[in-house]
Image (tube, rainbow, N blue to C red; front, side, top):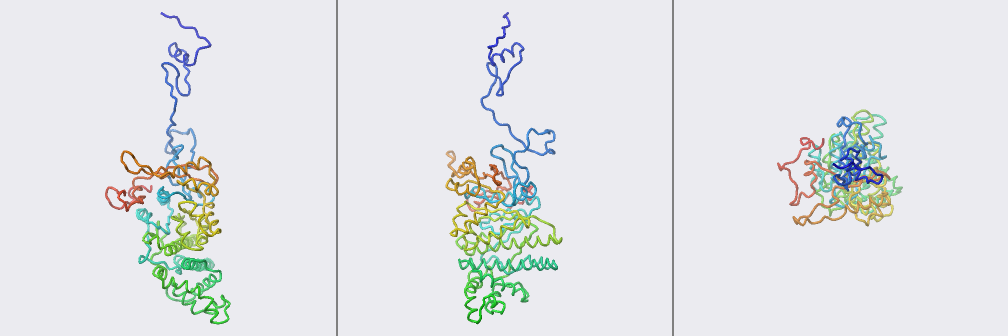
Length: 518
């Protein structure tokens, strides 16, 4: 029988731990486990899985060890790539409820195919559950049609022979004015007159591919005002505007300072030539007829322009701008009725996808978009604008247009940055401050997909669904978006290829039955 060893001051921690276990002495265990023979020590510790919930959901764990690292207010998008925590985010919730941003708007930049439209569609689903009405006033690729129909919304299809837009129609502003009285009615009608004249001026700029002059815009405004005094028994058309300009009443002649008939004709001739291309040219079937469909603001709406070929830039740009103007005018009319207590207050989520198309459609359109996008906070609009890169904004020929387009990003409450090439980092950093690590992430996400050596098929791009959420100068939040099974088919933008995703029944999905919107 051996003797109990004497304890010396030179004993190691491992030896003390082992002997402590054998002789009843207190064991000393480090942060990574017990050292020495019979112990168990690990060189690497995995981070524990993080779970999040409210005090009602996980009340048995209260008080929590730590607070939430990212906001839990808004539409759930996916998981934080660093902490694994769920990120909830949308421009309306972060502005109205959380107070995290000063402007209820967002701008998304990423290469094609990395999930820009998917972010918008997820927000549409989540905001629809909260009662926010989403509007897509110009879906150039038809990517929102299936989703809006699944939500029970309104889909309006426009194109050659598929519908028309009358830029002189009072629309919902006229309907709202009929319900108002006094000063409120007069102010709304004045606003409608200004919007319609601005819309016609923008169309003129598109068809002539040159900016309209200030004198011409003043004449147009007066002509639209005079048309309101003519009882036609129907909304005025562009053909009526042309006829009025040809007639040349005294009020119009006074605007041109013409002393003779010949001087007046020469003054309005360039404007008439541009308007005639809208009345008699290839755009007549779209803009010189009564509006075929009115927007409904009690459910989601998408205007599908996918039937317009991308090569017809003039038609596409004109229809896009008209649709955007119609959407803002309809929301403005609802806002006036709400102020008068004649309609319940609603918030709207406006999705302006494929921004690069409208910016390149014609001269002067940057000014029009700039005017439209400054209305969101005043009339309860959450706004999302999407394009592929900063080059879409900074490659415009006019320096003033480039500065204004850059302001679209600078004024946005939050910016979503997906995969972008390294050549864009310097220009992007001037608009959105980025750390070196954030820049590395964005460039890594832009790497092209590789081929799976086992299957021989192309793997998904490494940056698909990954975005860096920037709110002001704060550190960005890297997130991986996650979709429900019901959303996967509705987010398939390759439906015309053999790898399209189909549900088991092969029929259209109804989100109200699947619960994806919940």
